Amino acid sequence: MNLRPSGYEPDELPTAPLRDVSLPSSFGRDAKDNTFFLNFHGDRYFCDFNCIFRIIVASKPSFIILIKNVLMKNLWTAIFIMTSFLLQAQDHEGLYGAWERTIVGKTKAVYTITDGFFSIATFSQNSFISTIGGSWTPDGSMNITTKFEYASDDPELVGKSMSVSMKMEGDELMIDGSAWARLDSGGPGDLAGAWLISGRKQEGEMKPMIRGPRKTMKILSGTRFQWIAYNTDTREFMATGGGTYTTKDGVYTENIDFFSKDNSRAGAVLPFEYEVKGDDWHHSGKSSKGDPIYEVWSKREE
Image (tube, rainbow, N blue to C red; front, side, top):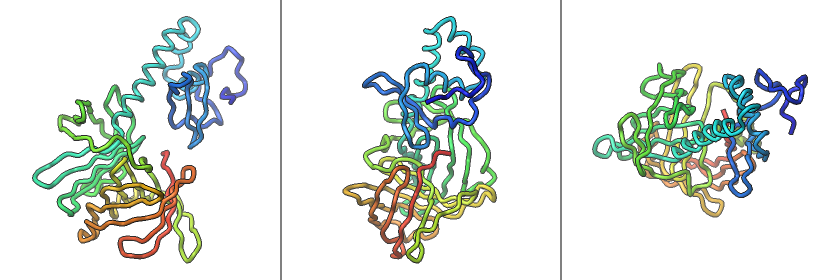
């Protein structure tokens, strides 16, 4: 895999991001053979230290001058910098999963965190209250910076960013001083991650969904699910629903805890057939209204 743009001599380090190359969405280390892997839009590639190091440099232009010097003069310093970068990513992986906080009485909030996306849903005994969510990026050791894509109670937050202070204390996550209890770490369900609806069967024909500001996202931990319909351009929140789920023998089962448009649907149990093909989740069965559905959801990367 040649990641060097044309026009560079063998010993030159590029002084700008690589051209015509898709940077990896994530990377890590394979403990079995001590090699590094990179994920490019669902495909995984393995490479040695030099390969992964060049990609880190390419994706972090502000480090280039420093790295160029240490790469030539002090390999161990370079290894330390890269290791720190990887450890920071691993620290944030500890956030993945679902977290719960009791607000008062039977009112609680569930915070679902996946690779790059999050959602917080607040509800009380089968009654939806509010939701807020969007994307996040690492910001320091355990802190993150969130960017809101929807906010049911305050649409003016959409498009804005916020720094959030986090600290792990056993099975609790301290967020700006408030304790959240861990519900799961991304398992045992098969569908943890953020997904966007990309197709729906209508009149016997699969119709692709056009990507744009109007989104329907489904975000899942290992035991919790939530879907959200919203528009990032108009800042409009349309609807949401969520609860717990299981996956077993090709059957995905939702247990609904809240549904923003109709609280009476809370408590329903909805089984669906499911199959993951590459980055697509094929989902079929009957909706909460009893109508037959066949949907395709695609893993969200950005």
